[in-house]
Length: 339
Ligand code: HPA
Ligand code: ZN
Image 1 (cartoon, protein in one colour):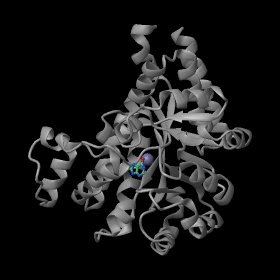
Image 2 (cartoon, protein in one colour):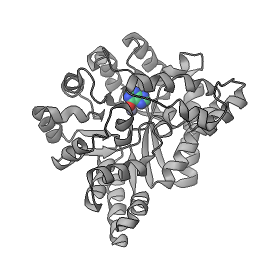
Image 3 (cartoon, helix red, strand yellow):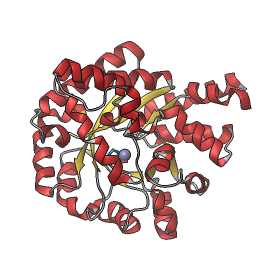
Image 4 (cartoon, protein in one colour):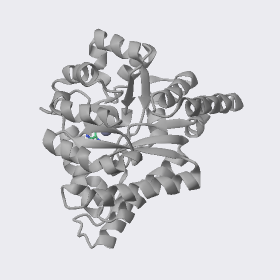
C-alpha cells in the first residue's frame, strides 16, 4: 500500500470544510483575470507571484492575500475562480465542500454583493451538473472590521439565504475575539444559518477564544481550533458534544513553524471529530489530498487513520443524515475494493 498511498488518498471519498474561495486564486487565473479586467499587476510571471508567497504568520499571509483579490470584478470572474477550485477538488476525491467567501473583501472595494454571490452560485450549479460534486457557501465576516459592518453584511445577505448554509469569522484574530461578534452570530442563528468561526493557530488568546466560541456563541463547528489540546476541559466539552474541528496541516506549516501534526493526531485519537482541509490551497500549494498525505507522512499515519479522517469530514459537514449514510457507505465500498 505504501507506494499507492497517494492514489488511495486521492480516490478516497471526502468532504472539504475549511476552504476559502479567495484562497484558491492560482497565479495563472490571476493573470487571466487581470488581463480581462485591465488590471496592472506588479508581478509578470508565475514565479514572480510565487516569490511573494513568503509568510511567517497569519498577518503576513493576509497582507498578500487581500490585495490579490482586486482582479476579481465581474460575476464570471467569481464563477471561474469557484469552478476551477471545484474541478480540482473533484479530481482529489472531494464529493462535498462547504466553502468560505469574504464578501466584505469585495464590497469594500466597490464590487456589489450580488456580483460576488451570483458568480459563486453559478459555478456551484455548473460543477454539480458536470461532476456531481455538491457544494455550499459559508459567508465569513472580517473580524478585523467592526461588528456593525458585519451586521450590515449579514442583512445584505438575507435575500440570498437559500444560497448560504452558514456564517463564519476570519481574517486577523489579534484583538478580535469571538465575543466582539456575539450579536451578529445570535442574529445569524435566528435567521437559520449554521455557525462556525476561525480560532486560528497559536493566537495570543487562543484558549479563551475557543472557550467563547463554544460556550458563549454556541458554534456548530470550529475552524482550526487545534490549540484546544492545551485545555482538557474544553477537549472533553468538544468531545461530548461532537463538536468538529477543521484542521489544515499544510496551512499551519506556513503561518507557524509546524504542521501541528502531533496535536491533530492526538485530538483525533482522543475521539474528537477532527477533519483535514486545505484552507487556502493556491497560497500553500496543497489541495485536499495533499493535506491528508502531508499529515500522514509527518505523523506516520496509515490507512485506518486516513479513513477515519475522511469519515469525520462527512460527519462534521452540514449534510442531511441520508446523504451522510450514503457517503459513509461509499467510503466502506472504496476501502473494501482497495484492500
Ligand atoms: N485564518 C484567518 N483568515 C483567513 C484564513 C485563515 O486560516 N484563510 C483566509 N483568511
Ligand atoms: Zn481559514
